[in-house]
Amino acid sequence: MFKNLKYLLNDCDKKETKCNKKCDKKKCCDLTTDGTHCQIENFVLSEANLPYEKCQTFPCLIKKFIKSVGIDTIIKISESLPIDGDRAAGINAGYSSIENFIYKGYTYNIRMTLTRTDGKVIYDSAVGKTDITANLQPLHTTRMEIQRATETAWGAMRRSSNTVGVTSLYASIWIPNIILINNLADINGNIEVINFRFSYLVDNQGNPIPIVL
Image (tube, rainbow, N blue to C red; front, side, top):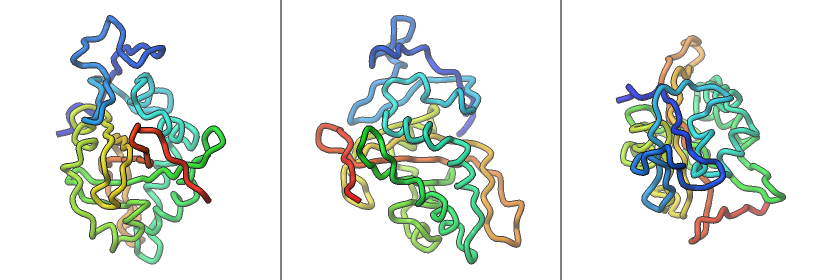
């Protein structure tokens, strides 16, 4: 299922939303309401080589958010120790301090959802802030952005949320070697491949909707 976790980005033209002439048009990025993805191979995760770094169509706001916060910081938050035995609560304690992102004078709430390879929700900053509420969420294997990320390296989708009922733009990436601490008795945790899905509210034209604090 995850044999394509090592990737090399297609050479997409940063100046245009379409790939340049060197790209096979059938394999290039194309952000639509039906979703988007990139065909990539031999990719190695690093700060300087994120799977969407050269892709013009990866949602700009999420790209800016991840680069501003730092992928290492986000990974460390996902590996947070449980609070009173509650892993999701431990993750939420870290993520709640960075989820409101200020960009060009406006504040946007960046929702984060973490899922296992079987689609089980580990944490959701909107509806899964504790293990109990996270466990109540349906499996996310049918979410198109996650399916596309499974097929390639990242996927995006603009759609109405199945859980909160509002239109959002989702971007999903798989990151390997995440250490999940189940409880303090098992301090070594489990090394897993986890899907990191980020989203924000958009209007009918796909423009980001800021929040009022």
